[in-house]
Length: 117
Image (tube, rainbow, N blue to C red; front, side, top):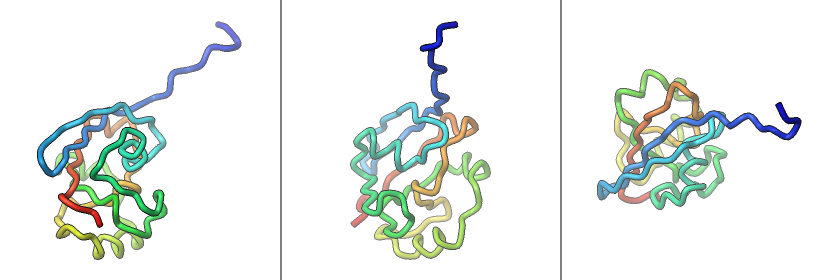
């Protein structure tokens, strides 16, 4: 094995669905957030004004219900910010900056609301 060989980064395939139904899938590196994957791939429905600091609620998404049990519980700060989303909060609402990508989330589907700001 060469000293310069790099181990490929593990990824999970995440599908972002817009409020109009347009679907785009990307391999997002494990260890990043669903928000980072959306921003890096130009998903219009993820504004991410605060850059992932969980203080703006502009990365609000609706998570496919099949994946909800695989996510970490909603922390206090996220709970507070979900009360400030422009789109009405749903039972499957999450802030994508708070969803850490793991291999278990391969195939995750998130839907973006009609507006974030």
